Length: 148
Image (cartoon, rainbow, N blue to C red; front, side, top):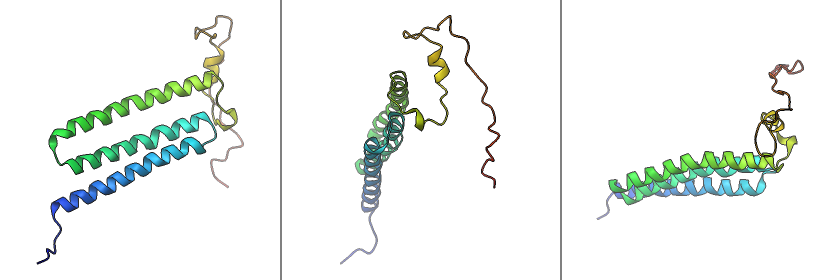
């Protein structure tokens, strides 16, 4: 009359549903972060990190839902292209935002790019008259490293 066990199709559909919901939530978190974070660099972080994981979860859900090995290389290719392009585009957007002053310096803990930008002209070529401004980070004597 009624089967007490669950079939393999039901288990695979359940896994696909959970992965799809988790992937959608990660992508939603990325979208919310784009609106909520205060400056361009943190928005860039919110738009790339959870979005890549969200895409991976959605692609895994598709692999479980389709149940065909022929789609696995296509899904892997889509994820690998996302893994290659997301960091590069985030780097370019962050660097362009830094150079055009679309960031809030009060949110930066360490500004490692300031000496590079200061030592180059507007075209990006090293300026001959600018002295070398690289410094070695010094230990902060007031920092107790979390000890009381």
